[in-house]
Amino acid sequence: MRLLKARRSIRRLRPDPVPRELLIEALDAARWAPSAHNAQPWRFVVVTDKRVKEELAKSMAEAWRRDLLADGVPEGKVRELTGASIERFTKAPVLVLACLSMEGMHEYPDERRRRAERIMAVQSVAAALQNLLLAAHALGLGACWYCAPLFCPDVVRRVLGLPEDLEPQALVALGFPAEEPEPPPRKPLSEVVRWERWRAGA
Ligand SMILES: Cc1cc2nc3c(=O)[nH]c(=O)nc-3n(C[C@H](O)[C@H](O)[C@H](O)COP(=O)(O)O)c2cc1C
Picture 1 (cartoon, protein in one colour):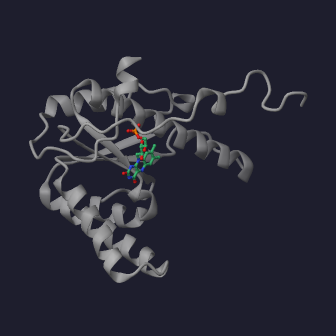
Picture 2 (cartoon, rainbow, N blue to C red; picture 1 turned 45 degrees about the vertical axis):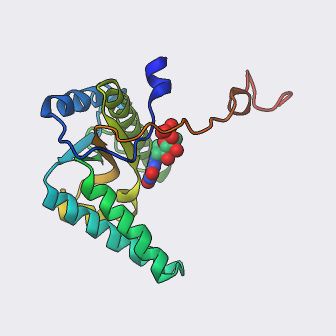
């Protein structure tokens, strides 16, 4: 309980490299997550090469820049946001891209069940990601889950040479922590849990 409550999203990382054994241990924990049909629909790409990190960071920032400008965000603000993003991803010692693969998931003729099946795969990848974050924390590493690849999957696919059937889901930046953030507030249990029925008398 202590371990899982003390995990934080660590956005500032020390530049020191992460020993490969630690990385492998954290990735190994990810693969022990529960998954629908035990299909283990997660795939990971580990990026440590500075040039690859930089190319990925710049390409994702360019896609984000286009979105922000289309939203009417002023040029200066766009430069500030995308610059910070490039720096964050390039300076992280390790980036782990988590992808979804529908291999081993069930196929259905109808959209309703296809959609449910896809959600199950997404949920499974999320479970693996949580294992990865908790394992990183247990091993003394800092990590943060970033959603950026979801918004520009084709850019990520091109830069990292992913096959068409791998869907980028999230990027986890890993390294030794350079900050100890305060825990962000949690909604009280009473707001998120109801017993027996959501609405009494339903
Ligand atoms: C699906 C998902 C997407 C997230 N995307 C981002 C992100 O793009 N940038 C970021 O700084 N943090 C991101 N986070 C981290 C959350 O902001 C963080 O988990 C939340 O604020 C609670 O803080 P904690 O992890 O320290 O408990 C993401 C977390 C999840 C689960």
